[in-house]
Image 1 (spheres, rainbow, N blue to C red):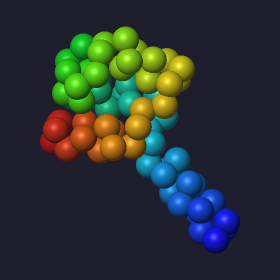
Image 2 (image 1 turned 45 degrees about the vertical axis):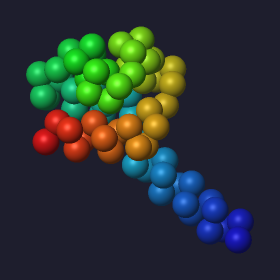
Image 3 (image 1 turned 90 degrees about the vertical axis):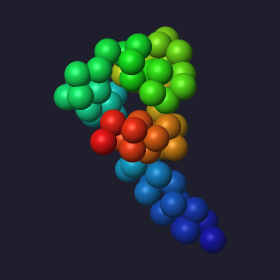
Length: 70
């Protein structure tokens, strides 16, 4: 059971973007931090903390962001 939980944790961590990936993705779509934050319904400060690496972006919000910018 512990091995399965560990595997699942690893899969989730692989899906979460690094701060650099998040910034690159945002910039490649010509978005400001404020615009990106608006897309996923968070404050600009929260987005800034994600890009600074001070806070990890939740997987579900990353998925939402990717879906909405397509």
